[in-house]
Length: 374
Image (cartoon, rainbow, N blue to C red; front, top):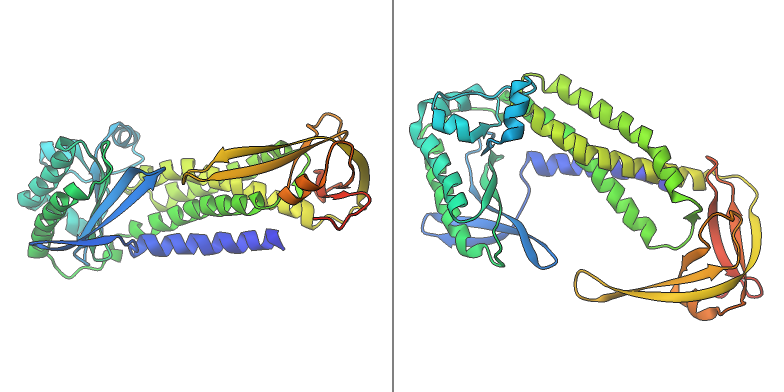
């Protein structure tokens, strides 16, 4: 049953996100400079570069995340939601937010001015080139930066510049490395676990939305009713994740970063997943007697739209003379085969079900005289 499968995929997606985040499992194109190899992973949307990563082999002993300190960071620090270490270097502390809770890294950043200067130089370099350096990571033996580029189609031309700066930071980290278990920072796994659940909900909701988009039937009579019915469940799940964030990350520098993602990504994911589960339960556990609603085709049309990849997509619709719910729009999306097999006045039968949760849905639309067509 799809509603059970939805819970299974949620668990699978959450564990997958946990694994990829904790072990920094991303890959890109490999290039080489004098200092050594580096990887570049480019994200695109409609052919336009929206972001990219530049990474090298890092220092396995450390789990570190640095970002440019912004208004949101300062706001949550004032509210005591997050607790950030201060190095005593006003220039560094005013510009860089230290999102790690390991005392060894705190001491390293405080004592090693070369490391602070290298980090500041990297962020300044990005700004001078028109980039926004979102985050600098050292995790699971990888050191990388995440950037938003200016209007350029090929950021590879500047990636080697960032790679060289990463090697400078790596040399400083290696010079003062010491035996260290990254799990000595108690908030690393906790924060990634919460974010994995949040992201897992979002991925799960999107995947199942794509799943139902491939089929015209079964179809809810009123999808919006189920959307709003799913909202309280989404708020409940998001509330639980928020409470977990505040409880498990109390006193962490990561608290507000995780909280913001939970409220944005987690709420959307919980809402989408709750909608899909309610929809599937309503249909799959429905034991009501089917109602055969006989009507005729009043009109038909097709709609051609351009896809993101430059191709086209055709959607087919028929307008029925009547539906069981007179206030509902009488146009339904159908397959291309069904569209080509009907004309104005064609007699059809719409199978209507009451729904296990009380939400009416349409099981199928068939020709009255020849149900086996399409």
